[in-house]
Image (tube, rainbow, N blue to C red; front, side):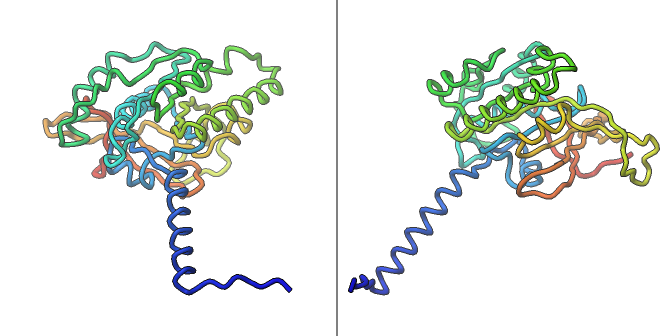
Length: 283
């Protein structure tokens, strides 16, 4: 007959506390959040963007997608206590010319708005601009990187496939998506994939919708199945006035789907100092 080992009450409590602490550390590590560079937008997003899986940022041209991504390239460089990861970023440009002038403007204006303390961070030295994704594994192994931006993911597939190659394109999407998920897991980085939108017929028309159409993220269901969180930005016909009396166009940020947040929306504006949420919006 095998005797069971008996544990004292104190030993059981210590074991339980250690197991709970280990579990909390694992959870915190896996679900770390990266600030988008605006406290109100962070609150809207439940703390920021998850450093896990793929976050898609979809929207029409000129809606503010790249603006938000550039801002996150700066916020990721702050220490974790300030919402960053204390690491650099990789910006993969697949279509347009990288907006280096706008990035330089943000480097001058954004830090003082985001955090009041002086910082010695050399922001421009920690953003690695690439035009192909093949170098990612080597770059991540050599550099401290906390954010990867692919701008845009649609550009990766549009040039290589004809419309009739839908099956091959779907396989390639799964392969690319799977590789991004593995990189996020292995190197603990946030993955942001910028995407374009397309117009479709809206079968669930809401009050005030006279068009019968809506915009949805491009690339279809094959890519959507690889996305962990989908955010969508759109322009509105609303505006707000700044301290100087200048009217600024308002954009809307929506959570389309997420594993831990319900669908909802908020408004923001783009200024010289970056992207900021707004609440007092007028028609």
